[in-house]
Image (cartoon, rainbow, N blue to C red; front, side):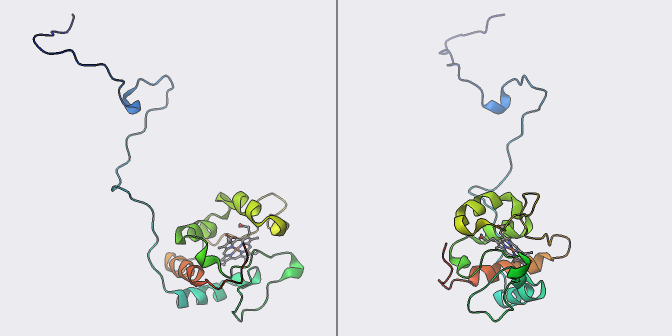
Length: 160
Ligand code: HEC
């Protein structure tokens, strides 16, 4: 049955938003995410003194040099060395540090490329980051404080 037009002008046909388009694949369309406007993930502000202690307790210094700190020097002879973290705080967002710590492989390819000359030795034989996972042992508060410590490392010695 043709639609009644009455005295009204004819509605222009516009394509429905993609989520209402009939799907050919059996995959159901995703509903719109319910998030506040301009939301983005932000980690709470931590205590960088406590974070320095976490860095010492978890022995991050075994692989990472921090210029100006008195941690033991990284164990270069074992080949377990990551990039120096001095000056890193000014170069990356807190959320970036969260990711490098809880999921180093998410962006390791970018970092390897970024570090260019020093890239050798950052990956294990299986092609994944040598950075160990702390996800089963680190508390969320330790993570928050550790990230505050990373952000506090703004001395310029680190060359990117
Ligand atoms: C066994 C050695 C090792 C230990 C221990 C280690 N890391 Fe790493 N880490 C690496 C290596 C290798 C990389 C470089 C590859 C990569 O980016 O995943 C790295 C990368 C990083 C990066 C990214 C640096 C950049 O260039 O952007 C951060 C931040 C970091 N580690 C923090 C930590 C913290 C915090 C700890 C302690 C909780 C820690 N690491 C313990 C080996 C280690």
